[in-house]
Image 1: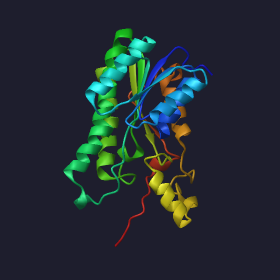
Image 2: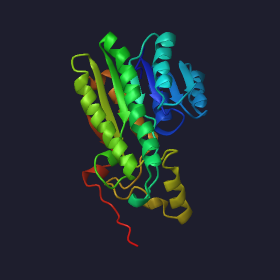
Image 3: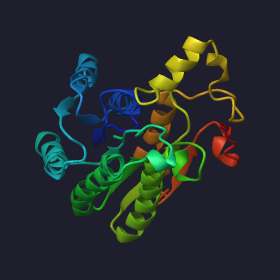
Image 4: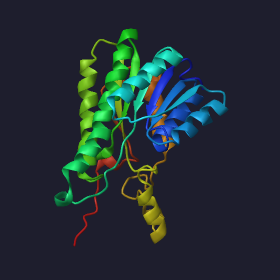
Length: 261
C-alpha cells in the first residue's frame, strides 16, 4: 500500500477498462488522479476514488486534442501541485477490416487517437516532468504492435508506432530523469473488446477465448493496471524505453487462425 503516496497521476481513457482500473489502483496506492476520457462515465471513476477518501478530478475531454491534453497537465499542476505519472492509455480498435476495404478515414481516426494522442500526452507530461527532473510516462501499446496476428491493420500500425515513440522518446529525454515505457496487453476484456466476448458467449464458445496463449485465458484490466503501477512506481526506476508484453505468453509465438473463404 501507498506505493504512490504523494504522487500525482494523469490517466487517459479512464472511463472504463484498463484506464479505469489503473486510475482506481493508482488512487488506492496514494496518488491524486486526473482522470480524462471523452465518455461521461469518467465522472464515475473520479467519484469512486473520492468515495474512498482519495483525490481525483474527472475531465470529459478529447485525448487526441492538443489543447485538451495540455489543459489536463496544467490542471494537474494547478490543483495538485505537479505531475509525477502520466498513463497515456486511451485508444480505439478500428475493427477487423479486410485490407482492400480499409479507408484513409479509418486509418486517420485510429492513428489520431492511438498514436498522436499518446504523443501529445507524452509531450506535455514530459514538459512538466523535466522541470522537476523526475517522472514516469506509461503508454498502452499492444501485442498487435509487436507482430502480425493480433489486430487490424491501422490498429497494429498505430501500436507499433507507440512502441517506436517510447523507444525514441526515451532517448530524447536522456539525462532528464524522466522515464517512458509501454505496456503491450494481449486480449483483455474491456469496452473495446467487449464485442469479441459477447459474440463468443452468444455462440457458447466463451471457454475458447484466449486459447491461443499459453495461459489459455484472456486477461482482465487489473492485470494490466498492476503492471502500470509497477512502471509508475520507484520499483521500476531502472526500466526505461521498454515495451512490456502482458499477454499470457501470446507474443512468444503469436499463433493465428487463418480464415479461408
